Amino acid sequence: MDIPETDRIKHRQINFRDLHPERNDARTAAEFLREVDGVLSAEPTSPILLDLSYDILRIDLQEIDAALRELGLHLDNGLLYRMKRALAYYTEDTLRENHGIRRAESQSTKLVFAKRYQSIEHGCRDPRPEHWRRYL
Image (cartoon, rainbow, N blue to C red; front, side, top):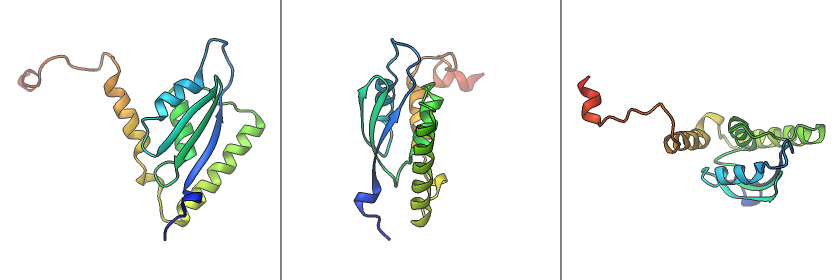
């Protein structure tokens, strides 16, 4: 059973809270989401508004929002935005279940976090060559 492209490609707007005048959450989220498998486009239209297009077969809005929260970005949690997100979560989850796509099959956000973890500098890496690590 094929999903028509009009149902498969989702276009959403993600609103962020305006916590600090210097902050630009939409740009940070766009840079992060451009590398996620399944995200077709992520363009910031203002410092707190992100236009997003993604393929529902690979990723859904709930996974995207969870990844953005884990990055430390603050989504707008006004009543209207929470209701919109809940409706989007429900419709996307229903569409995926009706077509036999399980949430566990989607590994795109885990792969992005693993890729990001490898690219940032932190103290969890062993600087010794591989043969020295096996020696001890």
